[in-house]
Structure formats: structure tokens, C-alpha cells
Image (tube, rainbow, N blue to C red; front, top):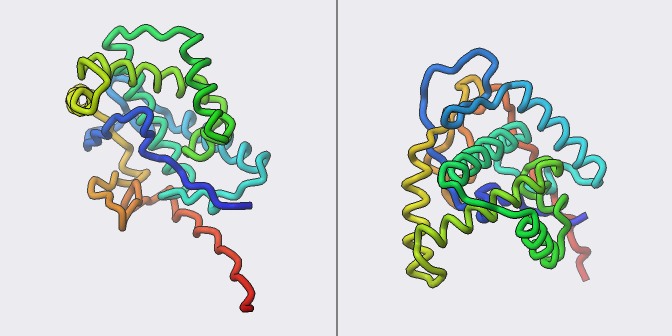
Amino acid sequence: MKSIRVAVAAAALAVGMTACSSPMEAGAAAVVGNERISASDLSRNVKEYEAALRKAGIQANQIGLPGSVPEVVLYQLANVKQAEQLVRKAGVRISEGEVDQAIDAAQQQGATLDQNMLSRGMAPSLGRDYMRISVGIQKLLQQYGGGTDEAAQQRGNERLQKEASTISISFNPRYGKINQQRSEENQALFIDAGRFGKAAEPAQQPQQPQG
């Protein structure tokens, strides 16, 4: 099976991660704004994601995750929760029909919603919620930018990043420290990953026989 690359940045959400250090309540893997992601929430999502990988016949090292499975799952849970709070705070309305259209549009690109979620390091059961938030973020970008042209998109993105910065994300230090200096050369989400362990080594592509 061919490798698939994870879209950890969640381009459809286009929300920046604002991580900080702060006292962490017992049993919390992360705190986003005033909402908590518990260690049990993380464990449940990791188990569901790994089970979905097995069902699809995919190994974690075929996806190219920039970290271990728990690391990427936690990062995505926090990213989505931050985006969800932004959409809710702005009072954006999203119809089920709009969610259906977004799902159809995504699947026309050649992958099912479940496959898209696996490629993002997220459990397939979160697919509809993820697409709902994606629609909300796109609406926010247009609202903040005042249009759909390139200049408007730039204005919208700048305003979105500013609003996102008001919703801080704190990760429990026992799970590692967020990598604020990510680059093309170093895509790791966390440094000193601690309990997360090492990411799976990328799958080796078979060598072509010499002619």
C-alpha cells in the first residue's frame, strides 16, 4: 500500500496554535481556552484511531506522522477545539446541508471522509464535526476579510490568527513541549516528547530491480 501523508496543519481550519506553559489540573492532557482535554479523552481517541488504521489495513508509518500517534492525536484535538471555540464565539451558523456539501466536495477529490480523517491523524468518528468546523472557519475567513479575493483572504487570515491568539492552548508538560520552531526540515510537533515515545519510522519504499 502506498504511503499517505498526514495533513497535520489542518489547512481547512487555518488556525494557528498558541501554546503556553501554565499549571495543569490533574488528569488533563491539555487545556484549550476554558475547555479541558482529559487524559482519558486522549486515550480513547488514540485507541479509536489505531483501530481505524488496522481496519483500513494501514500502518502508522505509512502515513508519515510528524510524531507518535498519541502526539498527533492530541495536537489535532487541541487544534479542532480551538477552532470550534472561535466559530462558536463569533456566532457563525452552519447548516447540516452545508456540512453535506463540504463532505461531498472533499470526497470528489478521490478519498472518503474516513480516509481524509486518518490522513489528518484523527479518528473517523470526528469526521462530520471536523467538516462542520471547517465550514465555520471558511465563513469566518470571508467575514473577517470582507470578500473572497486574494487580498480579502489575507486580511481574513490575519484577523483569524489574531482571534485565535486569544484562545490559548496549554499542553501537559509530561506529554512533551510543543515545537514552536517547526520548519520543512523539522516537522516534529513536540520536542522532548516524554511519554509519547518516538514516532514510527517511515515505511521503506521497495527498491526497483536493476534493468
